[in-house]
Length: 106
Image (cartoon, rainbow, N blue to C red):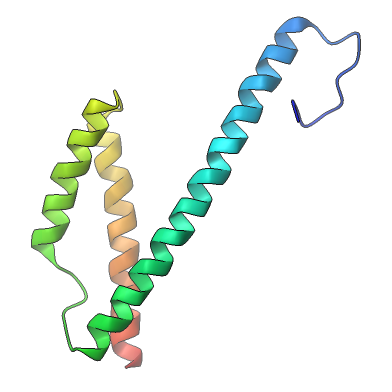
C-alpha cells in the first residue's frame, strides 16, 4: 500500500514518492512496536523471576553497561547517541517500573 488515500492519475509524482516514504516509515514503526512488545514480554519474565527470587527490581551496573553499549551502537548507526540514550533510558525506566510492580505483587 503506497498511501493512506487512493492515488489517482492526477496525483503528482512527488506525492507518490512521499507516499512511498510514508509506507516505509509505517512498516518500520510496525516492526518497532512488535520488537518492543517482544522485549517487554521477556523483561516481564525477568521481573517475575526477580520477584520470585527476591532480587532487586533494578541493576544499576547493567543499566549503565547497556547505556554505554547502546550509545556505541547508535554512533555506529549514525544515530545521535544522546537520542539513543534517552530512548533506552525510557525503556529501562519502564522495565524497572514493571519489575517493582511484580515484586509488590509477589
